[in-house]
Image 1: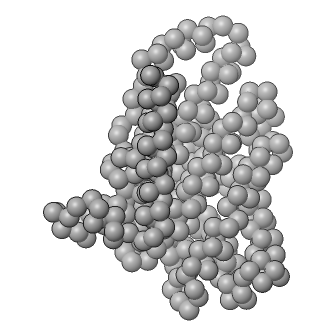
Image 2: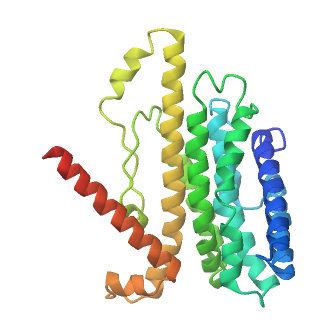
Image 3: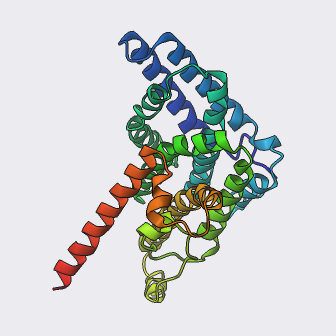
Length: 312
C-alpha cells in the first residue's frame, strides 16, 4: 500500500526544511538581480509542483512506484533507509518529471539561466541534512550510534541526483514515455539495495556502471567475521547494525544513480545505429553530459594510478 502521512513523517520534516530554504534562496536571488521576475515565478512554480508530486504518492497509479513505496513499509526496514527511499523517490523521480513539465509552461525562458538557478542552491542541502540530524529527525539515539554518517552520505547522493535530475528532465521532455522506465529503474534500485541480508562492503562504482546496466550486488567473503562480533557487547551490536545501514545506503544511492541514468543511456542507443562508435555516441550528448562523463573518467583514471603506486 502506498505510503501515507505517518510513513513519510521523517521525509516531511526534511522536505519542509528544504522548501523553506529554497523559498528564501529564490527571493534573495530576485533581490540581488540574479533571477528575473519570470524566473522567480518559474522556480516558485517548481516548488509548488514538487509538493503536488509528493502529495500524489498515496494515490499514485504507477504500479512500480506503488511497489517501491510498499518495500519501505516493512517493519524490518530501518528508519534511515525508509527516509532514503522517500528522498530518492522525490529527487530521482518527482523532480525530473516536474522540471520537464515546467519547460512547456515557461517556453520563453532561457534554459541555461533556468539550469543555473536550479543548480545553484544545491550545496545548501548538506546544511539541511546536518541540521535535521541535530534536531532529532532520526531519533534520540542517532548521535551515540553515529547516525550522522548515514545522513552525510544521503546528503551526498541527494546532491548528485539533484544535479542529474535536470539532464533527465531534458530527456523526458523529448520522450515522456520514458517516465515508466524511470519508475522501473527506481524499483529495481530499491530491490537491489534491500534484498542482501548483510552488506558489510560496498561494490566499487566505476566508469562502466554509468554506461551499462548495473551489476548485481555481491557479498564480500569476510562478512562472516562480522557476524562473530555481534556476540560481544550491546554497543558493538549497535555499531555493526549501523555499519550495515551505512553500506546499504551507499549501495542504494549508487543503484538509483546508475539505474536511472541507464534509462536514458539505452534510449540514446536505440536512437543510434548498431554500428555507431562510442566516441560518436558521446558526441550526441549535451555539453553537461559530456563534461560529466569526462570528469568521471579523469577521476577513475587517477584512482587506478593511485592504486598502482600504492601497490608498487
